[in-house]
Length: 563
Image (tube, helix red, strand yellow):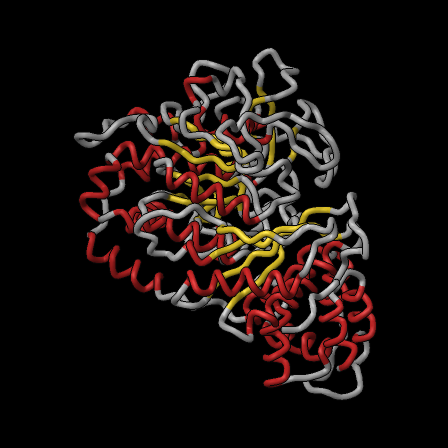
């Protein structure tokens, strides 16, 4: 075995070092033997961390029976590295560990770096707003009534419908798992709307999801309370949630939506499943982590409906909304027009009101305790409430008896996208999904034949892992595949099988750099690439490589410099 790699950690313990987690997926049948090999390789390869202590290996998810999705194969390797050049160190350590593990089996390794791809939602002043990054704007006059978004979704009409025998109204009996910043007791989110016997704080590792409301750069204290109020706020106050008789299970998962760690979101999804939630609503977005997709898949197969915000400001749908097993929700305004800052694309399933939606106001500046806010965070919250209405209306137990647990989300999605939406004039379904959510039409729609749903589910379930090229394409919707390939070939100075091999190794880091580094992304999109094969660098390649070199790992830099 080679000597321990010393990437980043100083020669003496550094008490100012920052924590780092490397996420590992075991792709071996014998997970217990692979875990032992992992622990040995970590000790021999990584050595001591920046604080002079051993790197620790632990299971990412708690062990459960009937682990059909194989979540026991995911591990986290935690330690500390020097504060300077965190991203570069993180990727170099991931490559070193992956290379060492490759000698004895099949493993995948990713660093869990904070993702800033999900830009903050916008809390609006009654007259105007200058909240970053959206710029100065005025709320539409049509958004002045507190219930405008509910009326656009026909929620009052849906509440008035008589449920099927055994069903319930207004989401009664449905629990909605809510990974976010936690909760505070608020006039719009009182204790009777919260299930505090099932809540959790993933960040602190305890069962108290209360939001500490800590300020500071980029933080969004109260974000979970605002989005939660849109789902379950009790009628009779300043606003009503879309499902005013459902209950919210708060799971403190993030401190701010612009710094998301995917392993925390994955743990929150699994917690929601284990405590018996029926819907999971994620008003957040992060990077692309294999363990999060697996956790969502297990939740869906266990009968949960899982959804996430499409994203704000960025031109591509963020994760986890991008995953095929998670419903992606874009935002529209009070005129049924797309919100100009909403992410959109083919991955979007539906749209819902998300611009100038009334939600709990943590500053309590208004006597009613509510304020208008904008973001896909509120669009997905609205859909979560409507999903609760649908489950309660038909009776979740009856739905499971008819279709089985693993088809519940498939049934909901089929009804939602065929009967439960409306399309305004000139609606672009390729960019904004099947239409705008219509709760009344959704509840009145007949349930589909179980056989047809099962067939559609099986076809959708035959999913292969995305290729390295597809990972990069997913964040570059403005470029055609051949354009992406030409730029990648220029970057590495090689095409064909040589490029394929480079992407297998470096696609995850390149995708991360494209989402986090605006300078590199801009250089990549604008690159004047005229050749598809190796040879003298075309115009613009040097600029492209310089932009990437700013924060890239030493391993990736070697690959592009040698080319």
